[in-house]
Image 1 (tube, rainbow, N blue to C red):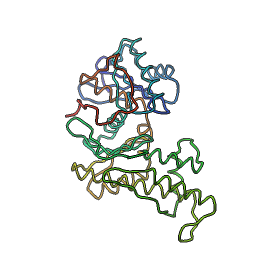
Image 2: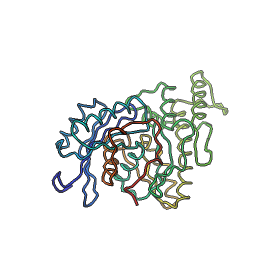
Image 3: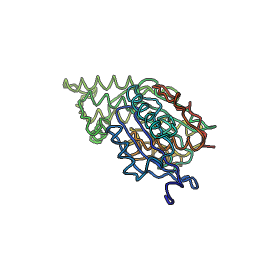
Image 4: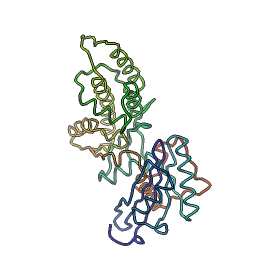
Length: 334
């Protein structure tokens, strides 16, 4: 971005809704609206990475306009830690605070990176599964998981199969699924615009136990961990494609934006792309740098809110585990 730091607005974003701590710095050009990522760090300690983020961005404390933090949803402990850290920085540096909805952060980051204008959003992660579309300054939820999130389903099944967490259980399931050849029968639980994943997980767990005991399919075939991962992915992703297609038909959109950690999955992107192509549309997705929770998405969404007059008073700088996407007034969009 051209121009000095004084000609742009800069936010430091603090993300900590689950097991990752991320701090990032982003700048907005007030003339063009262009966003530039200045630095992005996670999986370390708050003070150290806050300092490192500023150093890598080449930004001084005086250049920062606001401190943005994840207000929710998420896990209580991490949310509280980040809220306290962000509040402390705001007090020390004399900066405004902006509380950000984690889900909206994913959406706005995805829109900025991919250039999607008005897509149906599939938000899939370890804690959330939602189909979303924008209308009248709200991100409206058309469908969601009724029990556990799809990412939680995949992660828990990785534990059943004793699959490594390095680099991530969902990623390792994806790689193993590429070797699968037998499609096993699993429950398909779409209920209107909503999905249920707990029954699918329970059945997959049963099949895993059966496999370990030397069991076979009803056709007498043996099956492997790769077949189980393949079958689980194909089933749950087909469910997600179905409810996303319904939302596209309802709002008349030809764009699908996939955000959240599970959005990195190439098979999900492929299946969604096939559906979108049949409708004359396209899929927008990012890689793990921006799909996985990070500080930049909080900085970006927070700065969008700040630029339209939104601030979080210190006495209201709380956090909450329940903070729905459609509760946020999206003032920065028409």
